[in-house]
Image (cartoon, rainbow, N blue to C red; front, side):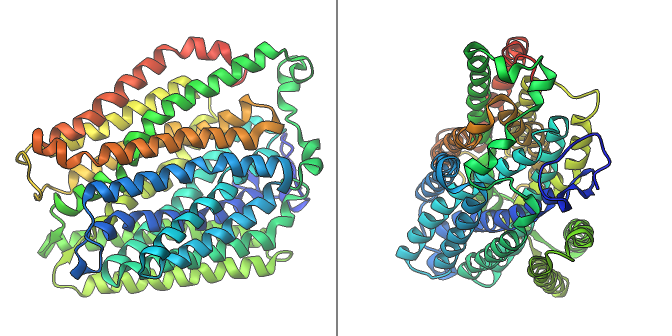
Length: 523
């Protein structure tokens, strides 16, 4: 039983804690992990596949066209949740929406396993539709569990975000490796397999949430009561003006979120192209051995940690949700088998060519490493305000691009290839990750605190629209890489993404007192 001062909603089993949080959070952790595995695994190789030569199995698209499709796809992925959130709020309930969304996405990945234009576009369409049902409603279920434990919510979303990035890490690593070495569509197909496992795992274990996330009528009892007790019974007497001010705060944070993602999502576009065509990725001798050992540790250590979390969840839930746990355990057996096969291949090579998609795993690795630290920080006395967190996130992101601007200074104007050291991408991803941890998971948490419980699904949808706008801007701006490097140079291209986020972050930090006032006591 839960012996803490917090009351978590859900079944009796959900009151059994893991890492200080309800066990149901980790059911969502692993469900989201497989969804992110599929999304980021596909994203890691989409631009590489489209721009690769026909002889290499690609479609030989121009960088501008490939990044245009990438931007449109990622934009629609974040636009669709507003419709999915509305449907869940009004008709389906959160849990049914998650199940159907996951199943539709699995079909989308399956379609992309076929090497035809129609299957690519059908696959992308299904991924967009399924994501709309899935994405906002996962976070809505978390909110339902924490309505009477608001102080734990920032930490909960940070742990959940670690699951997001565990999936991204494994998806990029394995889909990227298989796509680049065995065939692009094998990589797309692998993403679909684990999306299907994630669907089954959630569906079979959803009883742990009790009534949380069912139809709207059955979840009405979970209206947010935290503000009722913390702000003089405000939830009953709150004026339209106070709620309007809180909506304004959500709007301000969403606006600055656009700037963050417009730069951050260069990871799947221009930064992937930089890794492929402008970075020295061929290693021999001691350098190759160092990479092999480092990559082994980078892969195995996080997987051991995630497997340990899986084992602890099994101890709590296996007796009642055995079949769900069997599907989840089988998934990890397959993952371990692929990882061992991949590492074995790398150690038998005379020289190592680091896959261009490999660099994207650094973001996920850093998040898995630092997320627990940030979770504890947000629960300590050093927890800064929302605007300060967002401002720091934007500044750290800009500094990461500053590293790339410096590292690419030696690339001649208009060059289509170069051989820049890998260290600049490695350091840039570190800064980007620290910025992401400071901004993204706490953004989800603040939305849930600032809006009424009945509007959460819709507001998460609006929040993801802001992220979608940033993603589309990322594709459009990234598509200008050839034009800017021809007229100026590569360093200038990355300098744009250095200056804009830093200025936006400083402005937001200056606005911090105003934003704090508009929040009316929400922390």
